[in-house]
Amino acid sequence: MPPQPASTQSTRTAPDRERTAERLLASSAKLSFNPLKDVDWDADPVPGAYYCPPRHLSLYGTDLWERMTDEERIELSKHEVASIASVGIWFEEILMQMLLRHAFDRDPTSNHVQYALTEIADECRHSIMFARMIAKMGVPAYGAGFVAHNLGRLFKAISTHSQTFGGTMYVEEILDAFQREVMNDDTLQPLTRQVSRIHVIEEARHISYAREELVRKRLGPVRRRYEQLFIGLIVYYATTALIHPRLYAAVGVDPKTGRAVARANPHWRATKVEMAQKVVSVLDRAGLVGRTNRWLLRAAGVLA
Ligand SMILES: [Fe+2]
Ligand SMILES: [Fe+2]
Image (cartoon, rainbow, N blue to C red; front, side, top):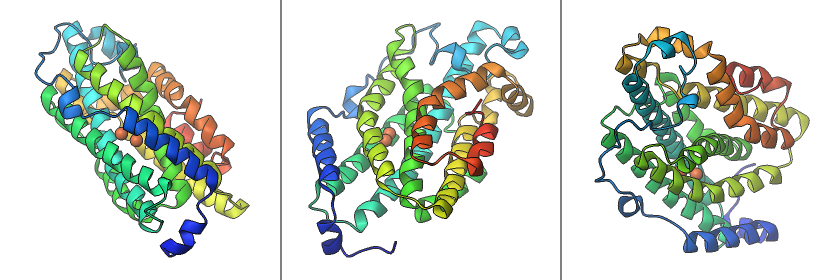
Protein backbone atom coordinates (compact mmCIF):
# COMPACT_ATOMS: atom_id res chain seq x y z
CA MET A 1 0.00 0.00 0.00
CA PRO A 2 1.43 3.43 -0.87
CA PRO A 3 2.26 5.66 2.09
CA GLN A 4 -0.67 7.72 3.37
CA PRO A 5 -0.43 11.29 4.58
CA ALA A 6 -0.13 11.48 8.36
CA SER A 7 -3.56 13.07 8.74
CA THR A 8 -5.23 10.09 7.01
CA GLN A 9 -3.17 7.58 8.99
CA SER A 10 -4.00 9.13 12.35
CA THR A 11 -7.73 8.56 11.87
CA ARG A 12 -6.98 4.90 11.16
CA THR A 13 -4.98 4.19 14.30
CA ALA A 14 -6.89 1.28 15.80
CA PRO A 15 -7.86 1.64 19.48
CA ASP A 16 -6.21 -1.66 20.42
CA ARG A 17 -3.01 -0.51 18.72
CA GLU A 18 -3.06 2.65 20.80
CA ARG A 19 -3.82 0.74 24.00
CA THR A 20 -0.88 -1.61 23.42
CA ALA A 21 1.49 1.28 22.74
CA GLU A 22 0.23 3.17 25.80
CA ARG A 23 0.96 0.14 27.98
CA LEU A 24 4.42 -0.31 26.44
CA LEU A 25 5.27 3.38 26.88
CA ALA A 26 4.25 3.23 30.55
CA SER A 27 6.34 0.10 31.06
CA SER A 28 9.35 1.75 29.34
CA ALA A 29 9.03 4.79 31.60
CA LYS A 30 9.03 2.49 34.63
CA LEU A 31 11.87 0.13 33.69
CA SER A 32 14.51 1.04 31.12
CA PHE A 33 18.27 0.90 31.34
CA ASN A 34 21.31 2.95 30.52
CA PRO A 35 23.86 0.21 29.78
CA LEU A 36 26.75 2.68 30.00
CA LYS A 37 25.93 3.06 33.70
CA ASP A 38 23.98 -0.11 34.50
CA VAL A 39 26.64 -2.64 33.45
CA ASP A 40 29.82 -3.07 35.50
CA TRP A 41 32.30 -2.47 32.68
CA ASP A 42 35.33 -2.36 34.97
CA ALA A 43 35.03 -5.87 36.45
CA ASP A 44 37.57 -8.44 35.31
CA PRO A 45 36.33 -11.71 33.82
CA VAL A 46 35.84 -14.55 36.31
CA PRO A 47 38.54 -17.20 35.72
CA GLY A 48 37.14 -20.54 34.59
CA ALA A 49 33.62 -19.25 33.85
CA TYR A 50 31.92 -19.74 30.48
CA TYR A 51 30.32 -16.84 28.60
CA CYS A 52 27.21 -18.90 27.75
CA PRO A 53 26.04 -22.42 28.63
CA PRO A 54 28.51 -24.84 26.96
CA ARG A 55 25.69 -27.07 25.72
CA HIS A 56 24.65 -24.24 23.38
CA LEU A 57 28.03 -23.96 21.66
CA SER A 58 28.14 -24.98 18.01
CA LEU A 59 30.82 -27.66 18.52
CA TYR A 60 29.43 -29.05 21.80
CA GLY A 61 29.35 -32.85 21.90
CA THR A 62 31.46 -33.37 18.75
CA ASP A 63 34.82 -35.16 18.53
CA LEU A 64 36.45 -31.76 18.11
CA TRP A 65 34.85 -30.66 21.39
CA GLU A 66 36.10 -33.75 23.19
CA ARG A 67 39.65 -32.95 22.13
CA MET A 68 39.48 -29.33 23.36
CA THR A 69 40.87 -28.23 26.73
CA ASP A 70 38.63 -26.38 29.23
CA GLU A 71 40.42 -23.13 28.35
CA GLU A 72 39.71 -23.62 24.66
CA ARG A 73 36.04 -24.39 25.35
CA ILE A 74 35.69 -21.20 27.43
CA GLU A 75 37.48 -19.24 24.71
CA LEU A 76 35.07 -20.68 22.14
CA SER A 77 32.12 -19.56 24.32
CA LYS A 78 33.54 -16.02 24.40
CA HIS A 79 33.92 -15.86 20.61
CA GLU A 80 30.49 -17.40 19.94
CA VAL A 81 28.77 -14.93 22.31
CA ALA A 82 30.63 -12.07 20.58
CA SER A 83 29.63 -13.39 17.15
CA ILE A 84 25.95 -13.60 18.17
CA ALA A 85 26.12 -10.09 19.68
CA SER A 86 27.62 -8.70 16.48
CA VAL A 87 24.80 -10.29 14.47
CA GLY A 88 22.48 -8.66 17.05
CA ILE A 89 23.97 -5.27 16.13
CA TRP A 90 23.59 -6.03 12.40
CA PHE A 91 19.90 -6.77 12.90
CA GLU A 92 19.24 -3.91 15.32
CA GLU A 93 20.67 -1.46 12.81
CA ILE A 94 18.37 -2.94 10.17
CA LEU A 95 15.44 -2.78 12.60
CA MET A 96 16.08 0.84 13.57
CA GLN A 97 15.79 1.83 9.92
CA MET A 98 12.66 -0.27 9.38
CA LEU A 99 11.00 1.26 12.45
CA LEU A 100 11.90 4.74 11.25
CA ARG A 101 10.23 3.97 7.93
CA HIS A 102 7.19 2.69 9.87
CA ALA A 103 7.03 5.92 11.91
CA PHE A 104 7.73 8.19 8.94
CA ASP A 105 4.28 7.79 7.36
CA ARG A 106 2.27 7.87 10.56
CA ASP A 107 0.96 10.37 13.07
CA PRO A 108 3.78 11.23 15.50
CA THR A 109 1.26 12.22 18.20
CA SER A 110 -0.03 8.62 18.36
CA ASN A 111 1.18 6.32 21.12
CA HIS A 112 1.93 3.79 18.39
CA VAL A 113 4.54 6.00 16.71
CA GLN A 114 5.92 7.22 20.01
CA TYR A 115 6.51 3.63 21.03
CA ALA A 116 8.25 2.92 17.69
CA LEU A 117 10.58 5.84 18.46
CA THR A 118 11.10 4.52 22.01
CA GLU A 119 12.03 1.14 20.60
CA ILE A 120 14.54 2.74 18.23
CA ALA A 121 16.11 4.47 21.25
CA ASP A 122 16.24 1.10 23.09
CA GLU A 123 17.88 -0.60 20.09
CA CYS A 124 20.38 2.20 19.78
CA ARG A 125 21.46 1.67 23.40
CA HIS A 126 21.51 -2.12 22.89
CA SER A 127 23.83 -1.87 19.90
CA ILE A 128 26.23 0.31 21.89
CA MET A 129 26.00 -2.19 24.78
CA PHE A 130 26.76 -5.17 22.51
CA ALA A 131 29.60 -3.28 20.83
CA ARG A 132 31.08 -2.39 24.19
CA MET A 133 30.77 -5.98 25.42
CA ILE A 134 32.60 -7.27 22.33
CA ALA A 135 35.35 -4.67 22.78
CA LYS A 136 35.63 -5.52 26.50
CA MET A 137 36.02 -9.21 25.64
CA GLY A 138 38.85 -8.26 23.30
CA VAL A 139 37.47 -10.23 20.35
CA PRO A 140 36.49 -9.11 16.83
CA ALA A 141 32.98 -7.96 15.88
CA TYR A 142 32.59 -10.82 13.42
CA GLY A 143 29.41 -9.49 11.82
CA ALA A 144 26.85 -11.32 9.72
CA GLY A 145 29.16 -12.15 6.82
CA PHE A 146 29.34 -10.59 3.35
CA VAL A 147 26.11 -11.97 1.84
CA ALA A 148 23.83 -11.43 4.85
CA HIS A 149 25.33 -8.00 5.49
CA ASN A 150 24.58 -6.83 1.97
CA LEU A 151 21.14 -8.45 1.81
CA GLY A 152 20.43 -6.51 5.00
CA ARG A 153 21.36 -3.31 3.17
CA LEU A 154 18.56 -3.96 0.68
CA PHE A 155 16.07 -5.46 3.11
CA LYS A 156 16.09 -2.53 5.54
CA ALA A 157 15.12 -0.24 2.66
CA ILE A 158 12.31 -2.27 1.06
CA SER A 159 10.82 -4.60 3.71
CA THR A 160 7.02 -4.83 3.87
CA HIS A 161 4.97 -4.64 7.07
CA SER A 162 4.90 -8.45 7.51
CA GLN A 163 8.62 -8.76 6.77
CA THR A 164 9.52 -5.94 9.16
CA PHE A 165 7.59 -7.34 12.10
CA GLY A 166 7.96 -11.04 11.22
CA GLY A 167 11.73 -10.70 10.80
CA THR A 168 11.99 -8.61 13.95
CA MET A 169 10.07 -11.15 15.98
CA TYR A 170 12.24 -13.96 14.70
CA VAL A 171 15.57 -12.37 15.59
CA GLU A 172 14.32 -10.95 18.90
CA GLU A 173 12.81 -14.27 20.00
CA ILE A 174 15.86 -16.42 19.26
CA LEU A 175 18.14 -13.96 21.06
CA ASP A 176 15.62 -13.84 23.90
CA ALA A 177 15.60 -17.62 24.33
CA PHE A 178 19.41 -17.68 24.41
CA GLN A 179 19.79 -14.71 26.74
CA ARG A 180 17.14 -15.87 29.23
CA GLU A 181 19.27 -18.92 29.92
CA VAL A 182 22.43 -16.84 30.20
CA MET A 183 20.94 -14.32 32.66
CA ASN A 184 19.56 -17.08 34.91
CA ASP A 185 22.76 -19.14 35.11
CA ASP A 186 24.95 -17.87 37.95
CA THR A 187 27.92 -20.02 36.91
CA LEU A 188 28.44 -17.81 33.81
CA GLN A 189 30.45 -14.59 33.36
CA PRO A 190 28.76 -11.63 35.12
CA LEU A 191 29.30 -9.43 32.04
CA THR A 192 27.23 -11.57 29.66
CA ARG A 193 24.63 -12.13 32.38
CA GLN A 194 24.16 -8.38 32.99
CA VAL A 195 23.98 -7.59 29.27
CA SER A 196 21.51 -10.43 28.72
CA ARG A 197 19.26 -9.30 31.58
CA ILE A 198 18.98 -5.73 30.26
CA HIS A 199 18.28 -7.02 26.78
CA VAL A 200 15.67 -9.58 27.87
CA ILE A 201 13.70 -7.02 29.91
CA GLU A 202 13.56 -4.38 27.18
CA GLU A 203 13.04 -6.86 24.36
CA ALA A 204 9.93 -8.33 26.01
CA ARG A 205 8.16 -5.07 25.08
CA HIS A 206 9.53 -5.10 21.53
CA ILE A 207 8.35 -8.66 21.04
CA SER A 208 4.79 -7.86 22.08
CA TYR A 209 4.76 -4.78 19.82
CA ALA A 210 5.97 -6.83 16.84
CA ARG A 211 3.67 -9.79 17.59
CA GLU A 212 0.56 -7.60 17.63
CA GLU A 213 1.57 -5.75 14.46
CA LEU A 214 2.17 -9.04 12.72
CA VAL A 215 -1.33 -10.41 13.28
CA ARG A 216 -2.97 -7.10 12.35
CA LYS A 217 -2.04 -7.56 8.71
CA ARG A 218 -4.48 -9.67 6.68
CA LEU A 219 -2.85 -11.40 3.72
CA GLY A 220 -4.39 -12.91 0.60
CA PRO A 221 -3.08 -16.29 -0.66
CA VAL A 222 -0.63 -14.90 -3.24
CA ARG A 223 0.72 -12.18 -0.99
CA ARG A 224 1.05 -14.73 1.81
CA ARG A 225 3.42 -16.86 -0.29
CA TYR A 226 5.53 -13.82 -1.14
CA GLU A 227 5.81 -12.84 2.54
CA GLN A 228 6.58 -16.44 3.52
CA LEU A 229 9.47 -16.53 1.07
CA PHE A 230 11.00 -13.36 2.53
CA ILE A 231 10.47 -14.54 6.11
CA GLY A 232 12.19 -17.80 5.13
CA LEU A 233 15.16 -15.86 3.76
CA ILE A 234 15.44 -13.77 6.92
CA VAL A 235 15.30 -16.90 9.07
CA TYR A 236 17.91 -18.60 6.91
CA TYR A 237 20.41 -15.74 6.76
CA ALA A 238 19.96 -14.55 10.36
CA THR A 239 20.36 -18.08 11.77
CA THR A 240 23.26 -19.22 9.64
CA ALA A 241 25.06 -15.92 10.34
CA LEU A 242 25.00 -16.38 14.13
CA ILE A 243 28.31 -18.22 14.31
CA HIS A 244 30.95 -16.73 12.03
CA PRO A 245 33.30 -19.53 10.86
CA ARG A 246 36.34 -17.28 11.30
CA LEU A 247 35.97 -17.58 15.08
CA TYR A 248 36.98 -21.25 15.08
CA ALA A 249 40.56 -20.18 14.31
CA ALA A 250 40.69 -18.61 17.80
CA VAL A 251 40.62 -22.14 19.29
CA GLY A 252 42.93 -23.70 16.72
CA VAL A 253 40.21 -25.13 14.48
CA ASP A 254 40.27 -24.53 10.74
CA PRO A 255 37.21 -22.33 9.93
CA LYS A 256 36.02 -24.59 7.09
CA THR A 257 36.30 -27.69 9.28
CA GLY A 258 34.61 -25.94 12.20
CA ARG A 259 31.71 -24.84 10.02
CA ALA A 260 31.24 -28.32 8.54
CA VAL A 261 31.40 -29.99 11.97
CA ALA A 262 28.91 -27.49 13.44
CA ARG A 263 26.57 -27.96 10.51
CA ALA A 264 26.51 -31.72 11.05
CA ASN A 265 26.31 -31.44 14.85
CA PRO A 266 22.93 -32.76 16.13
CA HIS A 267 23.40 -30.87 19.45
CA TRP A 268 23.80 -27.54 17.66
CA ARG A 269 20.80 -28.30 15.50
CA ALA A 270 18.75 -29.16 18.60
CA THR A 271 19.83 -25.85 20.18
CA LYS A 272 18.64 -23.92 17.13
CA VAL A 273 15.33 -25.79 17.03
CA GLU A 274 14.87 -25.13 20.76
CA MET A 275 15.66 -21.39 20.43
CA ALA A 276 13.33 -20.96 17.47
CA GLN A 277 10.47 -23.21 18.60
CA LYS A 278 8.28 -20.51 20.12
CA VAL A 279 8.71 -17.94 17.35
CA VAL A 280 8.23 -20.46 14.55
CA SER A 281 4.86 -21.40 16.03
CA VAL A 282 3.87 -17.70 16.29
CA LEU A 283 4.89 -17.15 12.66
CA ASP A 284 2.96 -20.27 11.73
CA ARG A 285 -0.19 -18.99 13.46
CA ALA A 286 0.22 -15.69 11.57
CA GLY A 287 0.20 -17.69 8.31
CA LEU A 288 3.87 -17.00 7.65
CA VAL A 289 5.11 -20.59 7.61
CA GLY A 290 4.15 -22.79 4.68
CA ARG A 291 5.28 -24.70 1.64
CA THR A 292 7.08 -21.63 0.29
CA ASN A 293 9.50 -21.33 3.18
CA ARG A 294 9.56 -24.63 5.10
CA TRP A 295 12.60 -25.75 3.11
CA LEU A 296 14.45 -22.57 4.11
CA LEU A 297 13.57 -23.10 7.76
CA ARG A 298 14.88 -26.65 7.49
CA ALA A 299 18.06 -25.48 5.75
CA ALA A 300 18.55 -22.95 8.57
CA GLY A 301 18.29 -25.87 11.02
CA VAL A 302 15.37 -24.42 13.00
CA LEU A 303 12.72 -26.90 11.87
CA ALA A 304 13.20 -30.55 12.78
FE1 LIG B 1 17.78 -5.06 21.14
FE1 LIG C 1 14.34 -5.24 20.04
